Image 1 (cartoon, rainbow, N blue to C red):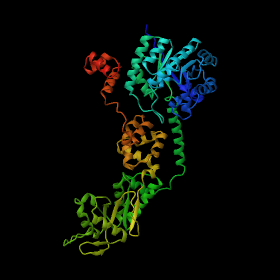
Image 2 (cartoon, rainbow, N blue to C red):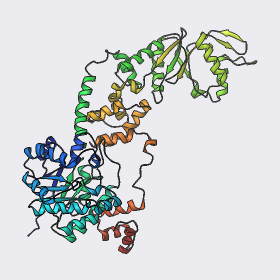
Image 3 (cartoon, helix red, strand yellow):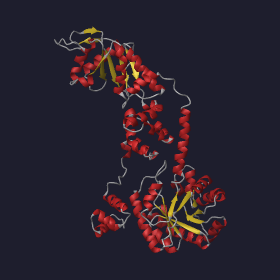
Image 4 (cartoon, rainbow, N blue to C red):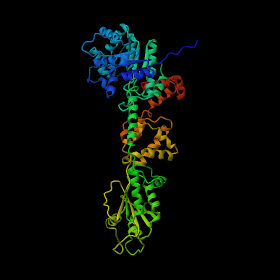
Length: 564
């Protein structure tokens, strides 16, 4: 006869009636009513449950009795603790059961404190030992108990005391806005779960073991860890309320925000001009973008010199391409880009303004039907900078060889940074190309264009959750179009597999300096060994064969890395 598989249970640690009802609808098997759940609903991180901001016993009792018990048929475990001045265990157990709770769970709990502080609390009679005694009193009164623990010694003590179930906690949850930094990797978590389950099941086969917290932030993480250990289920806290609430409400509000932003559309653009610009790589529909296109058109058809301000990472070459295309019907048809043609920067002044001495070479400024492209940067020699200032201020320049003031026949396009302070006068036309921060309405269109250029499907942009789109609109985009293209390159694989999350977007939007100090768990010998163990479901014989080492060598390595 085939051995019947035991059903794995899922519990939810909640702090309000609406979360309890949603958990029941989702298929939860039992609920924890604990103050950490209430703190999350109040907008605080779970760890606030350990701070002296409220009386945990009274706060938990109030919402559990008034909000949780009346609306659910699931077993509800009340969070109890022994930190009061005097706790009558038997009386508290009786009160818990009379109210209709299935049992109790030790929360808030001393397990979240350091080893030294836990020893002090135990000596004071309000530590782990007292929590075990309180849960044992609930069992003796006819209720059920679940014991939060975080070490093997705590698990062993609970088993020795005869408690019915353990909730092994890997620490505060990762993920979401208020998530914690990783204390350990998923492989380390799987290994620890494997070791704890071995200990627990070898000591008492009837003792139930549940997992909670740490890097188990989504269902796939739980599946990975659960395959490595004999467990009876999982309890979710932040993963079942805070993270989904942040995501779902964030998406809903962002959706309405985007809808409101679209109520007052920009004035109808010059469609012919927009299409022509798009063909050259200038993409957008916003008022700021279409205004910039009009500036480019006026400059191309005008007669003055052009001061072109382009932000870092902006589409400089595409703008020049549009200027050249629009200038084809005017007298200025040849574009000479001196950055690409001038090998020696020191000769640039002579080429543009004319040579000194006896060289009679004609300067570029006297050539007909010509636009000269210059960059206002440190590479320009002093003579060229001086000549340009004179040209833009007065409309004329001095020919060095003859020392004559001359009027130019060619135009100059001077490309400057977005923050240029040059004064504009009747001799000059300004084109200010906007930053992405000034045209956030164009981000979606820019992403679609980038996906297409990367060989992907432009329609993938529509799959982005509203909260992700809103986050992209809130980003400063210091790298402008160039930065958007790089973001598109990074997220396209995840978007193609429907696995793009807000956390992934944030990791790519954060600059490298802010990532400094994060531990790379994937490069250490310990992590490499853990990954090998995980790939082989923590079967040591299979792992040793996969690594081509003996079981004894594997055992010694595990001992050296404190994995035993």
